[in-house]
Amino acid sequence: MATKAMNESWRRVRDQIKAIWDDADFDDKEMKRARGEMHKIVGLIHDKTGESPEEIRRKMSAIL
Image 1 (cartoon, helix red, strand yellow):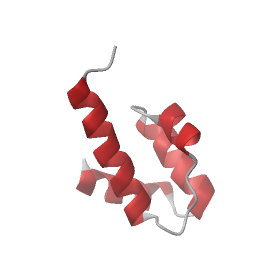
Image 2: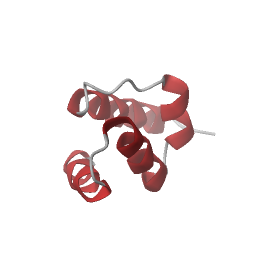
Image 3: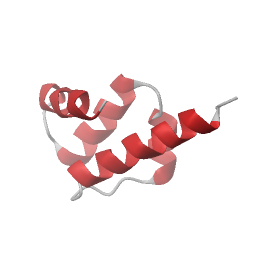
Image 4: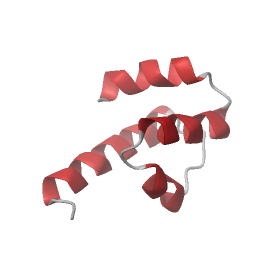
């Protein structure tokens, strides 16, 4: 079971993803399914934006 701190951390990361890729429409259910799995998060962002996975990983490393 997720702890309060883990949930807060995920919300922070989720909000930063939405801020960085603000032109993409992320569904909360999609984000929840990708939670905690970098390859799924990268794939979701790539599908929504067309941005290269390498660039997405670079931006993600700055917020993690």
